[in-house]
Image (cartoon, rainbow, N blue to C red; front, side, top):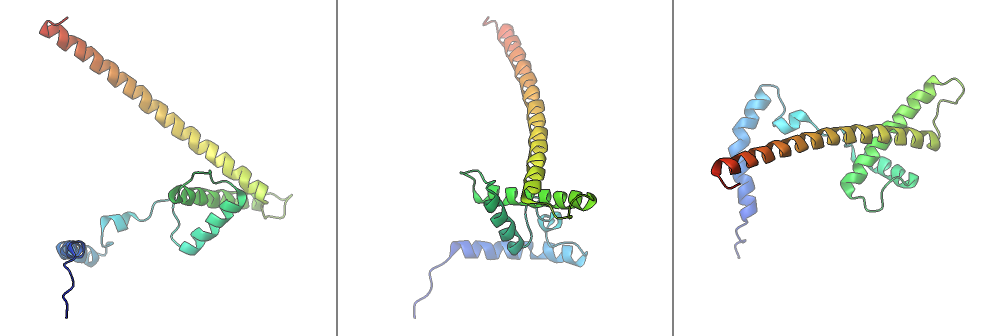
Length: 155
């Protein structure tokens, strides 16, 4: 009979579980989720159901909206945004009396691309604000550097 080798990772996980078990028990007794992360829930750019995720990832693949070098996470996010865009297209088609109420793939793609333009424009605006703030901070530090050099008498 041979003893199994010591598994340091498993021992660490067991110690962590023992350490946090009282905290989790207290949160559950208070009617809260076991952890703060579980309380926050999943990110809004992910699916909760793997089957739904697989459907939308396949749909996005069929529509050809994945970039060539997209990784799994990026594909998941794109599929989620496609699902939101198709939902928006369905709502708009339901309100339009001239259509059957079911959006075509073209309607879905139009809604998806409009949504992406709005998202990327907002992202660009935020990045430009951050860049302007960084430029201001750089100028402040350069001014402070010049003052420090002058006080030291190196100029």
